[in-house]
Image 1 (cartoon, helix red, strand yellow):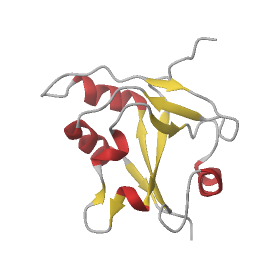
Image 2 (tube, rainbow, N blue to C red):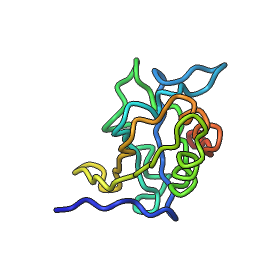
Image 3 (cartoon, helix red, strand yellow):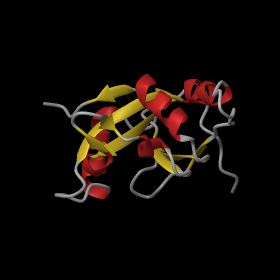
Image 4 (cartoon, rainbow, N blue to C red):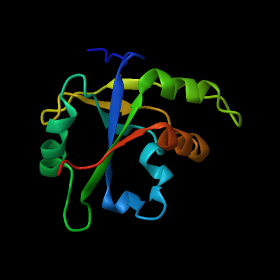
Length: 130
């Protein structure tokens, strides 16, 4: 079965864990680099439900604790790639549903570090609910 691309109008969430950030510098660029970066689609599963989902299936306390989510629009991310001055890059976000997360998707390309930093800066940060 062909896997579809996530539409530009949708937003995606990237869970950021304690091993991917520090309190002073924030998230490391590695949260958006490496290719096949796991993200999730809040259009299919609301942000509020992602906290428990990720804590149960992705977090591995005490060394990998879910700290926050970054949210960015797919079309905006693709635009950042197109306009990237060092080397314009086509960014694709592909649907990749998993049994535990039917909203799972992948950023296919290995984003350059500078582009990843721009994506982080342009993302909305969602801290855990109190």
